[in-house]
Image 1 (cartoon, rainbow, N blue to C red):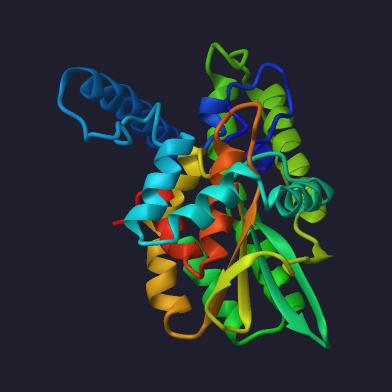
Image 2 (cartoon, rainbow, N blue to C red):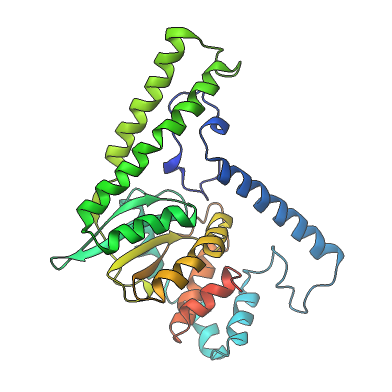
Length: 301
């Protein structure tokens, strides 16, 4: 598993456990389609006509030249944008987001937090990585009419309710030849171990923490705040932006229910262009078009 996808949601309890039994099926399938689209897209770019700049190629689309082209397409001041990008004007802000994310225990993207300002203090709690729109909307709806502490308990209850699905997956695995073909008491003990450890993990993972969003770009003015640590070169982040966050913006942000905050967490060891793209987005933000540029980078139509 690449840390492009948050590994906090993977339960690594035993070296013998194969993730295909414990990984949500939807994420596996989405990962396959992302990989296929990248391969097919790359091959198409080699055999068919591309635009004059070459920015339709997955290999080139986050190059410095393409990042400047996107700014020009948005009618930004090209000279100002180019100077900003080449000087890495906002590198310190990106470093601050990276440090903040590491302090919050983040090691992959995307990572989501739900936050609220109560008693003059901004706090939030981790709610996961990629997830279906219905799952995210349920906790956003709950948070609009409840305080943060009550919302946290609601979220914990939802995660514990999912233990029944985990029980079925673990049971199937341990009965298989890969899991040891366990039966009887040995099978029950192995499954119980999984469930207990997941319950303990839920208690330590979902806790209220202080949130820092001072130098981050945001959209909307809702009292419920959705904070995402993300990477512009991460395929899971891109898919989540296209499939889920577009709906969140329409149904919650645009209607004044939710404020969306984007925090940079470029995984440079995996994505060589991610930090440059983060700088480019902030340079666009310097000209009041951060989220317009965000849409271009994540290819949101």
